[in-house]
Image (cartoon, rainbow, N blue to C red; front, top):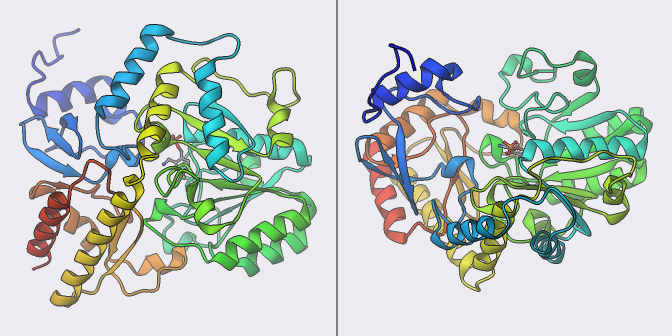
Length: 430
Ligand code: PMP
């Protein structure tokens, strides 16, 4: 510690100064907003508490994992008990890990086998490597508006400005040009664009990867014919179809959104909500594909912390809670109450806005419908979108004040929380 280190971290300013002194920008992840007036120091259930002790109803949910709410007592207890018993695996098989894989296979339609890692980015990286290995091809197709993690093959064309639509829009310096070149970006819900690309380059496409609902731009629902068409075209051209269910997995049902739609991919990636905030991700899919990753197989898959007992116990407990008969109906009822309430306010006040969402996810865009593809969202008034959220934050409702970000409801939210939120929305929109 040197003379410039703040000695007290009891206030927002002191915490920010300390973080920014030793961490670039004060945060460890690109999308973590630095708000000079707000540092959260405690979380419980549906709530966040700032350094000054003020309570916020949280709809950010740490970018989505906290499906049961913050610091879930039973999840925490089981995770703690797990590490008291066995604090790392590192060698051989483990019963709890196998039980979790069995559970995922019983629920997720595409899952015949499962591999565990720690983050969504690792899972999509492994899925794409596996697809390239089994097809012997290099190119992949992704869609404008979808985010699949921080690695070079996919870190492009998420929230692109209008002038970058139809071109490559990489999100970082230092990405390998050859890797960027091997990714083809197409519009979401545009089956004809995919068909044309496959007619021209079908022999070169290793994989088609998509967020089944692109929640990284709020909530754009997929047309069933689009997803079914992707399934048929992938099969026809021998490409691997990957559903990135990092957000939708468990949040929209234990079988993921693929179960809701009734379309089964070759590979599925899961993360975020599967362990309610503990670091865990999974690559699941066809056994003949996953078996390439066995030790000594031709596809290398590894990680010191993979299938950490703490996260495995958290995931098993999360499933146990989600299996209770009223969990999803209750969660979805809360989502519906929120969306209906928002629509009523918007209509009554004559605001030019559109409420979108599914299940426990909701978002208010400041634009007219439709919301079918990324370019529709260029009509959203980003300034209004962010200002609206900043005013809600002042009223103790936390929605990430960043354009197009979705909001998450958890099982810890109550109807009183939803109603209090709607009252605040009504005040702000007045
Ligand atoms: N896929 C999707 C759909 C995501 O939303 C994210 C994270 N926002 C990722 C992959 C990457 O996951 P992680 O941040 O855990 O690496």
